[in-house]
Image 1 (spheres, helix red, strand yellow):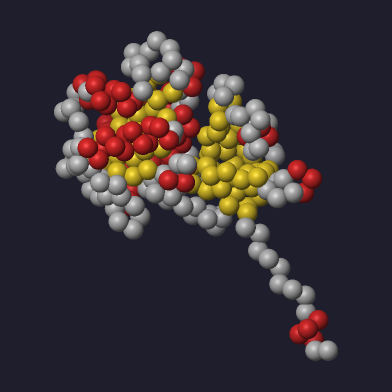
Image 2: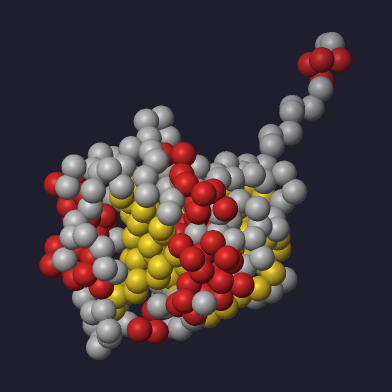
Length: 271
């Protein structure tokens, strides 16, 4: 028998990083955010997503879900924004993590909510519902966003006022960002809407688009223009479908990494 036949089989590379949890913030009983230590060799584009999870019970197969990275590409730690589902296979456990615990993260970020998938324009709309805000936390802190677009508008629709996580960040804290603070102060607008409680801008974002209230509130021409407006969508399937149809009716065309267009959505979270 040859030495080759006795050689041990090659060790299969681990497809996950095991990362230390640095902090956890619970916004309410429905939402939380957490940060993990960034691997030195991990690179991504602002707006991409990655698989996040925990080992399976009793050594079983890991439980993983796609999560948008809420940090910009240059950040030294990785931030994630999550819902809490009491009986969810992953979030029922993930919501209980504390600093010092470990989570699993895939090694291959991907996604279409990136600047590369859009053609040039004057105004960038970042429209999200619920935790669909996460990629905008990344894109809104990328210097390229402000060099490519004269105006950036973050629209966030939630059910209750308490669900407006990161409201203070987009309203004023981002203005102190050492890298893009001045640009954000001059070019970024935050537009939250609430569907189930009294609020200065009530209702679904799609209803405010159709009524024209969104544009009137922002003192902009009514409707989207394929000449000037570029849009990213993330959140509920209903919002993405309805808004996509509205954008198409205004003449905007969907883009992708292979063929940039006027608007993009993240299909990994749809269906």
